[in-house]
Length: 121
Image 1 (tube, rainbow, N blue to C red):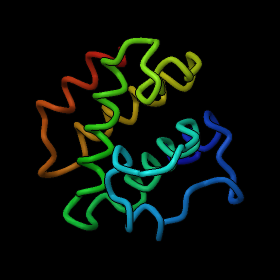
Image 2 (image 1 turned 90 degrees about the vertical axis):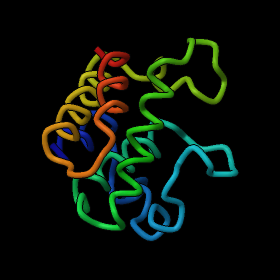
Image 3 (image 1 turned 60 degrees about the vertical axis):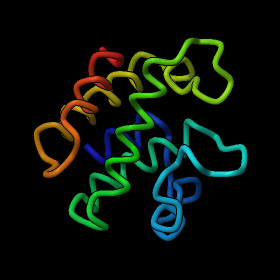
């Protein structure tokens, strides 16, 4: 799935967000600068795939929460418009990622995952 996410969002070694940055900023909703959502959010999703049992899954929990918030936001939400920036393939990758989270991650909030899945269908 990691390769699929990288392909769908055109992530490369040059533009993917580093593990160090993600570990230092485990909740992407609280990053203080303007970010390219089409790079940052998939980078966090990819990190979750690679490090699912790390840091008590804080990054995974926060990433799922961010996807739930972006999934339910209205199109004109300036800071929460990731869903509307995504094309059909990218939205499908987010949905597949959330299904993976539901089936794979231990100790993650299933209610939050279900909420996110509902908004990304």
